[in-house]
Image (cartoon, rainbow, N blue to C red; front, top):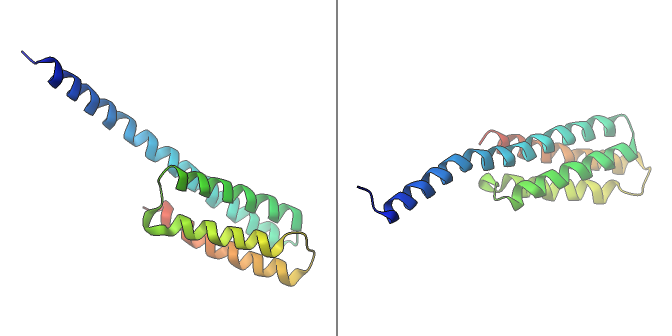
Length: 121
């Protein structure tokens, strides 16, 4: 017959294994959402939609930060994406200069590369 400690250890291990895929899926959902928002930001930026570019970039940044906060940052790619998204917002905010928007789009494109690599891990 199993003693109480062994039973509790087995139960704890079972719960940990059961909840681990759910945590990974939640982090992956944030990465997927960040990829979606970044793509939309790039698309809107190329259409010279300044406000929409900023909004989608902010949303992508929020999702990327959530993934990092949850501990999902394979080889620092999500952190690099966060840096590029912050730079994209900083460069393109409160302006209607096309050159600054294009620089923001380049940062968003670099962030997208990092997010795609993180999504594949």
